[in-house]
Every structure is written in C-alpha cells, then in structure tokens.
Length: 212
Image (cartoon, rainbow, N blue to C red; front, side, top):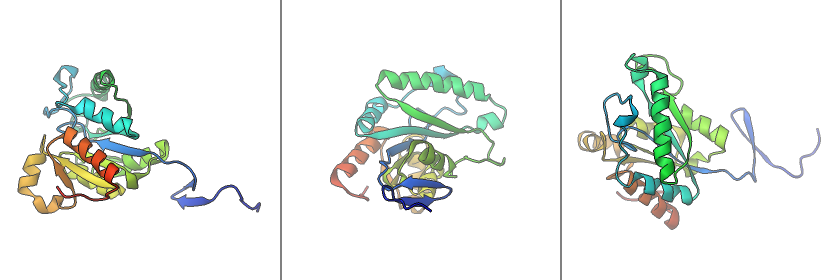
C-alpha cells in the first residue's frame, strides 16, 4: 500500500475526510413558528409571513460565514391535506422572499410523512443534518439549530450541534412554560433575530455555552 504523505485521513461512517479540509458552519432552521408565522397546515404562498427582522438577521449570520438550511416536518402531505407540489411552491416563494433580503438557502429538507408513518428524516431524527454534513461539508459541532418545538431542539442535540436554540415564537413560549426541564440544555431567546444575534455574540466571544 503506498504511503500517504500529503494527506491524513479520519474515518467517519463510510466517508473519508482530509484533516486539512475546511468544513463549513451552518445554521439549521425550523420553518413554521420560527422563520415564518405559524399557520396550521400552511399550503399556499399567500399564507407566508416572515417574522420581523428575520431576513436581515439571517443575512447577518450568512455574512459571518454560516450556510443556511431549513429542516421541516410537513405532515400535512402524509395526512392528505396538501401535496409535495404545494410545499415546493411555497418554498419557491419563500426562497424568493429571502433572496430579496440577500439571503441564500443552501437546501430545504422536508419530511412529508404523517407522525405515525415510517420516516427517514422526520424530526427529531438528525438524518437531514447528517445529509447536509456529507453533502455540504458541514461541521455539526460548530453549527446551530433554531426552532420553536422540542423536536427541533432534539434534532440538533441528536446531530451533535454546538447549540440548540429555542425561540419563544410559534410554540416556543408554551414549551418554555410547560416543560422547562426538557429544554434545560437549550438557549432560549425571543425570536429568530435574537437567536442570530446570540450566535454572532457567541462566535465573537469564543464561548461554547451561554446563559439565557
């Protein structure tokens, strides 16, 4: 076997990574209740409403070098309320709305299955984050997950992100009040803009944890 003098390899799963490979940081976002206002089984673009300051906040972390992803459970598809085509149409419009703010989404991951159905990526499964790791060379240990539900936090924890962040929009405030023990390891902030601000402050200070 030839001696490898120029590269050192680390084995992870079935992939090899070069030690000198520059891995990317990422912010993974829940959609409903985190990035956009909660609408029960949203299926039409006219229902879309970004939270105030969301676009500029995401532009800030993007400019700091983070790649942006949405990870969303859309059980309305599995329940027969709407189709994946409807979801894709909504996402096309959402992508354009964010582009106006200078924000680029690398990819939107969707789990369309109903809760009781088998699913490869339905949160709290970390599968989509692992997929992003492999496809976009993401260092999950230097990345963040922002969401308004416990399954969002768990998805981040299961993937080994640096921090899962709970926003008080959507279902977040209710979760904070009713199940504080379950979110003890999370950072809790008011909204997506505050979450992005916390990330930038954390990165600037070099902290791995922070008080709420």
